[in-house]
Image (cartoon, rainbow, N blue to C red):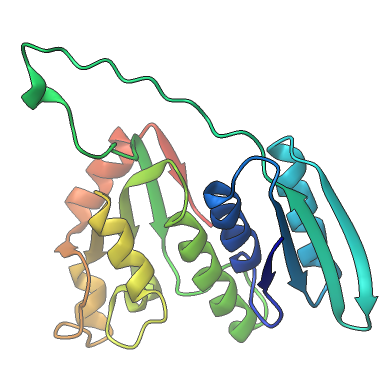
Length: 208
């Protein structure tokens, strides 16, 4: 049995790391995830149910919970390679979902406590970077511009999205307003015309 100690880790890291472990596990292998709160237990069991995997949860202490998930069979992927045009086969799949645009108009998610809002936004961007279907574009404006600049806790996750083909765009007017012109560390600068065009052409827009 493989054990993951996820105590002290913020949502959605326990779920994402459990999913990665399950993807690497052999069919029937047990993955035990140790967490320190009941919300994490619920998230893990929901993930297992969604994937139609067997799971069992147990409270072991005041702040210690165990969730055991049984890995399922691996998906079989059949790829047909035309002999006459082998150069047309891509080495890696493109995970972008064309037409999906994520708008980050603030460095916080939701309204209320500022510290919580920033923590939630960090978790959201991390979770997006680990999805099978990725956004075509991530647009950042107003205080969302801070997310792509020096000092942001989300830089590595945004860079991961960019490396997988997502376009990371930050409003130039906003960078100037917050005196961040020289601190952009991922993606490129955009303008309101391009932002408007991207929104009008988008098939789906997500605003966390």
